[in-house]
Every structure is written in C-alpha cells, then in structure tokens.
Amino acid sequence: MLVATIAGLLVVPAAAAPLVVERVVIVGRTAAGASWTDAATEARTGDGAELAFVIVGREGKRRVVVADAAVAPLRLGRRSIKSAERRDLTAVGDLRVQWSTVEPHGFRDGAAENGATSAFYSNVSTEARDFGRWLGYDHIDYFERVVAPWSAAPSARRVAAEISSGEADAIQIAGLGSVRYKVEVEVAGVRLATAGAEATDGFGLTRAVHRVSIRAGDDFLGWLGAYLLVPEVFGSAGGGANHQTERFTGADCADVMVGAMRRTGRTDVAYTNVAGLPRYAAVVAPAQVLDDHGMPATPIAGIQRGDLVRIDYGGALTGHTPRGWDHVAALWEDRSDPRGPHRGKSDGQLDGFDLVIHMGHPRLTIEPLSEQSPATVDVLRWRRRR
Image 1 (spheres, one colour):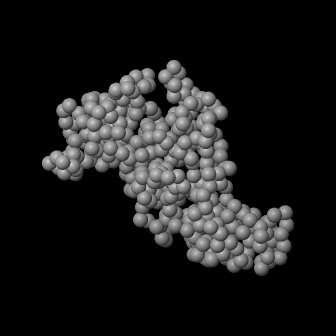
Image 2 (cartoon, one colour):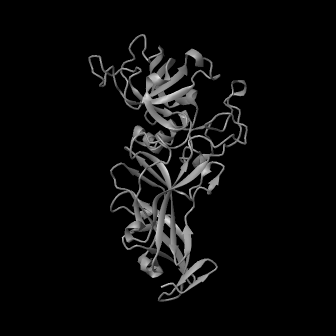
Image 3 (tube, helix red, strand yellow):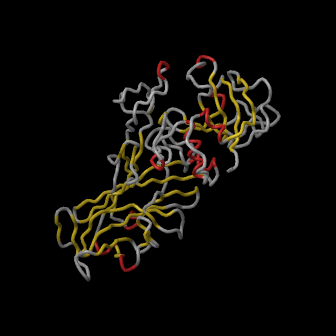
C-alpha cells in the first residue's frame, strides 16, 4: 500500500527499507521462453513477441526491480536480474497502464528549417544545381498514438509486440516492419512514463524509445521487411552504430539494402551509394532499357528473389541526378503476365510484372517494377563474404 509521495517518487513499505520507485522501463521478449530484456525487440513473424514493463527503484542504497513474476528471466542493460533484486508488482499496490506507439510522420510537417525543398526527409540537397550537397541532419517529425488505453486490469500489463501505423496506407504487409512503444504507469495518482516522441537527437529517436522490429526471416529479404515503416531520409548518414539505418530511424534507397544485409551478419558490407554497390554485389544482368510498361527488348533471365535492381531513370527523368544510377530496388517476388503462359506466376525473368521493394516516398514500399519505368536497369547479386 502506498504510504507517501516524496518529490514525485513513490515510497511504499517493504521488508528491509522503504521502496522508492524511480522509473519505468519497457522490456520485451522475442518468443515464449526467451529472456525479457530492455534491448530492442527484434523477432520473426509468428514468434509471438511480447512487451511488458518493469519498475526500477531502490531500497536504501540497494537497487530493486519490480515486475510481474511471469516476466522472467529478466535482463536490464545486459545484466541478469537475480531473484534477490526482484519485487512483485503487488509491492506498489493498484496501478493503471497505458500503451502507445511512437511513430514518424512519413512526410515532414511543413518546410524544413535546414533549407531542404523535398516533401520527404533529406539530409542533402535534391535540387539539380547542387544535388547531394550536405544540408545537415533533417528533423524527423514524430507523433504518439494510444494503442491500449488506460486500464487497471492485470492483463494490460503485457501487450503483443505488434506492428501497426497511425498513418493511412502505411502498412505494406501485415505484421512486418518497425515501430516504437511507450508505456505510462500510474500509481496512486503519480504517473511514470518511458521516453516518447520528445526523445530525439540529431539522428532521430534515441534508443531510449523501445523499438520493435518484426522480420519475415533471417535472410536479406527477411530483414529488409523489418525496415517497413522506417521513413525515407535521403542521404541517410551517421558514424558506426549511430548510422540512421543501423538505428532504424531513416534510410535511403541504397542504405536500406546495405542495412538489411548487415543485419544478416554481413558487417563487411559498408554503407555506400547506388553506384558503389558493385563492391559487394556482382552484376548478373547487364544494363538494358525497360519501356513504359517495364518490359525489356530482350528477356532478362536467371533472376532470383533478393537480387538488386539498379535503376537509371529514362523519359522525363533522364539526367535526374549526376550519377549513372539513380535508384535501387530488390526483387521481392518474381511474377509474369497473368495473360501469358505462366499465368502471373514466376517465369525467372525480370520485367514490369515483378514486385520490387525499394525506398520510395515517404517510406519503404513494395510495388510492380513497371511503376519505376521507363528506365535503364541492371541486376546485381550479393557476393558471398570474402
């Protein structure tokens, strides 16, 4: 039972010393039986990832963690929490809980202060006269959305680590992508909350905001799907672990491909632009022109899921950038003409009927290759680790 409130901290009776409640932390587990941890929750679809919260406090000089008994085993900051350090949530009495997502707006809210002219986020100039000139890290706009409103029910203390969006048509494949969560806990009128939309630095949301990333598998395309809902940031950047793609705060067309490959364990693949991808991927189909419908003059055969399709735009977009290659996508699904002999199924050839995944405006999207035509394309395939 609550006995006092001191300077915004909750003080409750305990066996050894009063328990002073200091903060609340979101923890997640990737599957039943896995450890609960405050690290980002990265799981595969169907694994049943969950989120819960723990309250961190102290008894005198001793740190304690207040949690449901079912939230075990538990690790905070890579450190296992021993049973002697734990207290049950009944120690703080009745409480209420509310869960929210913390999400980026796909397009910026109004004009960017750094002088960028694009509707999407960009760290570099998108104007032809000085294309690629560094502008500084763009400000990404975030909002919070309640997904589980205030409740005192014990069942409200844990929620499924689900991928959802508050922006219309943002979801491409149900259950895949990345989103962040916030929890608020109220005890005797005192409210504790984890970091939310305000917790940003130059790269975007900080790691203090709990990230959930759900992937389709452990391969390149599996991890690429985990970048769904991550906003486009043209010229995404950052050193080491702070690269915006590493942090899932933003990516451009080449960086999202590299980021997904790095997540498979290929840390030998460095961030680069579209023209630099042949350092890590071999050309398996040379450049060829696609017409307005995405059809090549001669068949582009032997393609595989996960192949990279570099795109040099034709038509009205010719010369859009000063580089030889403007954009890159990955083959998501091999399809064919539904009226042809394969009746829409796989035919092993690249054309406008195939589905590609690429960083569009304002986020990663999956659509027919014909949407990127007319263009000149070539096809690359990731090399094995050297």
